[in-house]
Length: 315
Length: 249
Image 1 (cartoon, one colour):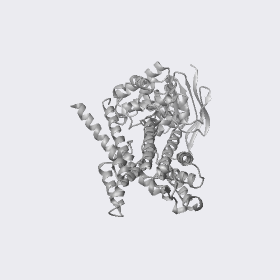
Image 2 (cartoon, chains in turn red, cyan; image 1 turned 90 degrees about the horizontal axis):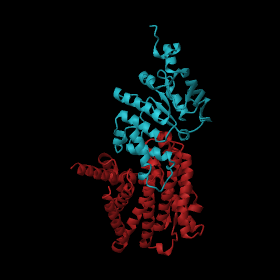
Image 3 (tube, rainbow over the protein chains, first blue to last red; image 1 turned 90 degrees about the vertical axis):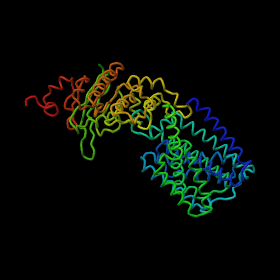
Image 4 (tube, each protein chain N blue to C red; image 1 turned 30 degrees about the vertical axis):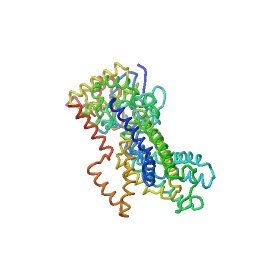
């Protein structure tokens, strides 16, 4: 284990160096796609904090992504706030919404929690869709004036890389903390947790607020990249998509959702060039995954590494 | 011995069915009390009422001078009442070590710590509990792969990690082999002696009951039939008729 740590640090260092060097060597289109993968990856990782680690059926997580994005968009276009204030407000407002929705839903268990959360999220989507004078209705808001340095893909990419990087480190620390360990225990057996003095609902609520905060940050980053927002960012279909990203990458692993986001964004980009029905390819991949790799890509990889380590130890 | 827990006239009804009716129970500091009764007598319901998993319709439960009848299970646990369940109730996907460590971290009020690495915390306390319950050698195993007997012992270890003053055990030897039953009985006695624990034990195995209990409470159709020393209970005419079987036959 001790020997593995320098290797892991080296791998992270090399990976980071490659990511920093991408804009210098790759065409702008690929930098854009990579930015999108990072933003979506942060969104999926934030969902996985509550889904994979907390066992909370947060069916409509995208609503916090949309809230973060709309907060930044409205802060700039309607309130005239400086972009950095709007950027800070996005995650904070999303976290507050997470606290409010979570406080209502956390009294219910599993599937009932998910259904109520889906309903409340859909209510917010409807408000955004119908409140045309503020949100632009189904047209959304476009041409949001972000600072000049971020108007080029390269500038946006570096900001996204930095924010996503810091966010992932913070989420990793949380997952490995006593709070993270407690959250996993709550996922496995809430009754046992109550019997050892853990306030299950309070822990679930805090996890939802943290996850909503980072989903809001991802939403604000999306505005930095696209300079537009639209109601579909709060639509349940996007929630389903990030749910699939977690399953595809491995929802019991930290990097799984990021990998899942990478696969889906890349697949959508490549396959949609050839067919409008790219979701059929995604569906086929999912069916194969359920049969042959139910623990997801990273989960499968982790099991393989563990098996190899055990075999090496026995030799 | 001074009184630690008092259950006074507690009742619980489910959809018109009275599971517990005006039940009374007293537990002294450091004593082992067995709750016995036929299936459906209300034993598990009574334990759930004491540990906050159910709220009584009537009556009150007082622990060390404080009424706890309306408290949530986690609040009751924080008053140092630990428990096990009728079926092994552990964290099956966590290691044996992590099962106990979660409880240690909760006891140390660190479950809200977002920044420290959990791996290095509460190691000494966790190891001590695992050693005292004989599970240290299996610390790295996934809890779900342990034998039934070891899972029941792990449950006791999880409860012990919170350093309870009162331990509530719901059928701790159910489904165990004779060897495991003897080992668990010995463990319960040792824990009570070494830690000065008071224990409430709900158990069907009368050999276990009369081997460890200093006081026996008999529940029949939700009511307290009698509470007294094992000898008093053995001789009690109503108990013999209702549960142990008459000696006249």
